[in-house]
Length: 175
Image (cartoon, rainbow, N blue to C red):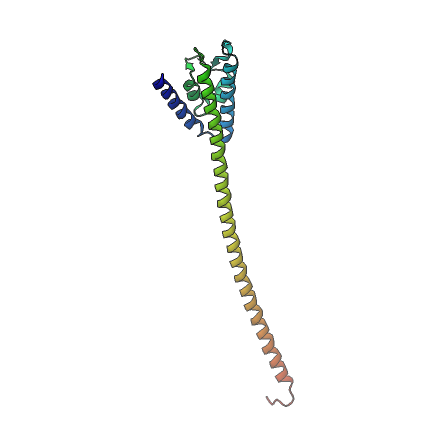
């Protein structure tokens, strides 16, 4: 049983790794759906309607099969598959509870990964903002220096013109 338990855990880990590759929207849908499937079987272990998932149902195709790791997680949880459906022939509530716990842990891990990614993006955006602010500051300083140089040049020209006018108006000045 120990080897079987280790193999099942290994299968679940592999399925979780696949689940973690989904986009946030797909991950939310597939994990919520699988959680509901597992919880229903745990709550009603003797009710066959909860132990069978039709492969052609909209829920199965759009919420489980279309997401990476969805089918693999169900298989690792004890479901078997044929052309028509996935079915849980033997219900081991402890195994299902362990699978559900691992699914919850995967959700926490995924949320942590998303938060880390958001934090990294925020840090990168802050660096980019600082770089843009510095570039803007340098551009403004250059523009200010160019404006000051132009202003000084104009003032020198005005001063020269004033001096020339004063010289021309000076009656003591002989041309």
